Amino acid sequence: SVQDTSFLFTVRLSFYSVNAAHVVPWFHFMIDGEAWDLPEEFENNTLPHKSGDPREAKAPGLGHIQFTCVSPMREWKLAYKGILRSMKTGERRDVEAEFTLYMNPHNVFRYQIHWDELTAARSMAGKEWNQRFWTNIRNQNQERYCSQAKRGTGYIQFEGAEKRELGPLDGSRDHNFGIRNWRFIHTYIWFPPVKFAEPIILDGVKYSYFTGAMTEYGSSFDNMVVGGLMSEDGKCASWSGATPMRDIATEWYDSTSERYVPVGDKTLAHGIFDWELAVLHSKYILEIHQERGSKHGLWQHYFMLADGMYM
Image (cartoon, rainbow, N blue to C red; front, side, top):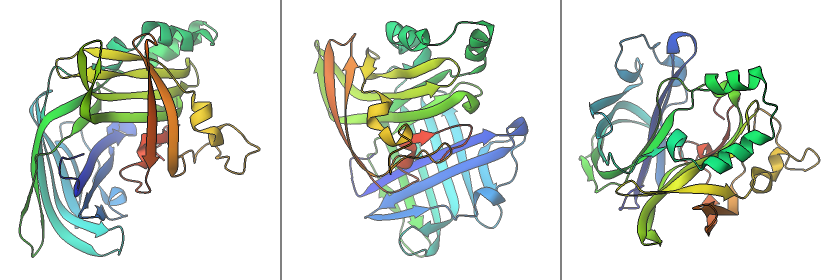
């Protein structure tokens, strides 16, 4: 998100398969109401990643995305040079873009530290605690964190046009320490860091953003609720409950519904979602009203099924 609402972008690199050789790239932005995305054939033409390579996706003849860590947990540069296509008209244009995110090292939400312990325990209680259960928990590798940028700068330049400076930008980062094993995740409602226009004040603390997920781990957690409101200095109001996924995404569960979505296609339909979120051991209840748009590269991934594959 940005303070100038005429511009919005999302960028991601994911590495999976044997030796993390397959690269899944995202580079999408919307400017002046028009959405631009990578060519559809970009991923299939991306060169395999090898150990020691830079954090990049390089598709010969199409483009090159590169992430550069200037300072861990503090500063990142994101760059793209290549072809993008208009999501509206299909037009293809050469584009050069670069962004720098300056992260706040204090307002970091760490999933295995900041979750609400009682809420986590309840989600585990419905499973049979046998050797396989504990082995699966160990193998899930969900050491994840989210953080909100304190400042961002950047530019975009279409071929034949003037360079357009962008900013100040609001941004965020969602990352996993090490390998994330998607095979354990069944259904997944995820919110990357969402900045409030004005801080929410609870018990005298100013919370600037929230992040989290509601997840079904088929082998270990039932409707796992993990998330929190974060202040700029690192105070956290952990999620202690939320409207169940069965109520938010009924089409995932009701096989008799006309809107039933089978496994493998569980991206929620566009529309309006109203749900509630409890924080600080359910001392406060937040009412959430969300309107979900139609752009797959920007919004559909807030609601997705994993099963080892992004939808």
